[in-house]
Amino acid sequence: MNTLRLVLAFGLLAWPATMWSVIGRSRRPGFWARLILVSLTAGFVLLLIALAHEVLPEGLLLGGHESAAEMCLRIGGHFLAGLPGGSWVAAGLFALVVVGGIRGVAQAHRRWRTLHVEPVVGTHLALGGGEMVVLPTRRHLAVGVPGTPRQVIVSQSVVERLRPAQLAGLLRHETAHLELGHHRFLTAAAVVDGALGRLRPIRRGVDALRLSLERWADEEAAGDSRGRREALRGAMMALGAEGGRQIWDTDFAAPRLRALTRPGPLGAGDVWWWLALGTGISVTFASLTGTLWMHLARLAAGG
Image 1 (tube, helix red, strand yellow):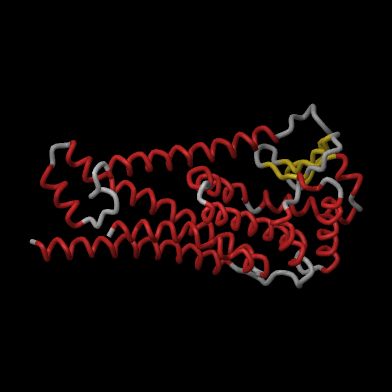
Image 2: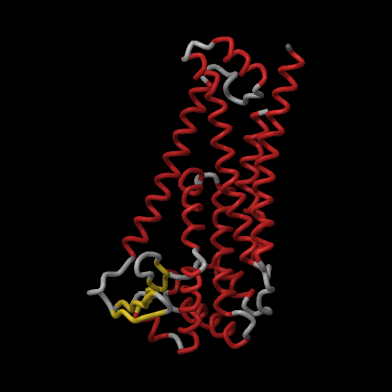
């Protein structure tokens, strides 16, 4: 039934919102980031498939296939197509979701292009296969920007305010984002957020992905070293004390600060990636094939 597809799609998109506290406590934030990424992607694709299925009967009618459209309505388990004008509503929703997703990606990439600093601006220093850029501004700023070359951008005020160990921890955190390819995760998040971010549970689910990425970068930067964990935590607290809202959102910073007081990460291993990927694929495949067999069974019973 297509209704089941819709329910499952929204379930996959919304359940990460319930994992906020778990992500804050977990010693494997990378696993949660991957699992949430797969869930959001699978839910988004499944939603598009379900909406396209709602449009199908009207498309068949416009193509002159009245009997096929009638059969599709009879066995499809549609949620909207059976209502007057329902297929057109589904078509409108499909277009809004697609356009919103494209707009979200475009905005994310435009932001990264805008942040990328030209060689004539600021002080550029070599940093782990990329460069560190110090901007002469009093506003607290620290961000990793993908591109060629990849950049870790910090403001002069951040350099002056932090102790050397704290600054090194902050640079390791931003470098970890770039080395782990977190911009790819954020691109997927931008698709879902741009298309469905007005729905609070889904927006919160996207935020859960972002939190898991921040915690993942924290653990990569600090590891199981007590000194590194204290230094990174100190950097966050120092920048949050004076105008640090430009960097740290309280909702995100609180679980990160708590996690840095606990022991370091467990070895995650590639098995966790395959478990996350396998879970998403299995759920999506089961939902698609399961409803297909239900449709075929209903058709056979009616024929």
